[in-house]
Image (cartoon, rainbow, N blue to C red; front, side, top):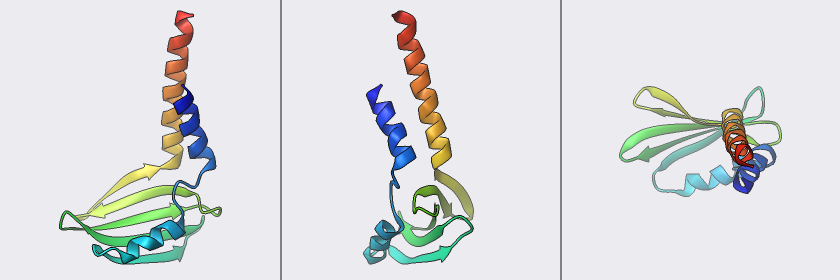
Length: 107
């Protein structure tokens, strides 16, 4: 149960990755660019790279405190959400509640 509490805490209180961390990707050989722009809620980082010889664009959305909120991936004309902080928090809370209630019923 402690690992769930730790994961929930990290999702609530940690940036996970910062815009500055992503800048390092621009030095990698498979990256074409890393661009930053202002969005309505904070910074947006867009990165274009090759993954398994497929052109891929990742878009990272940050809030005003530079906490990662969402990652979208665009590949072959398709877009997919790779990470969404609020969804991750809810899933972790549900897992914790399920385990806690399961352990409590045996006590």
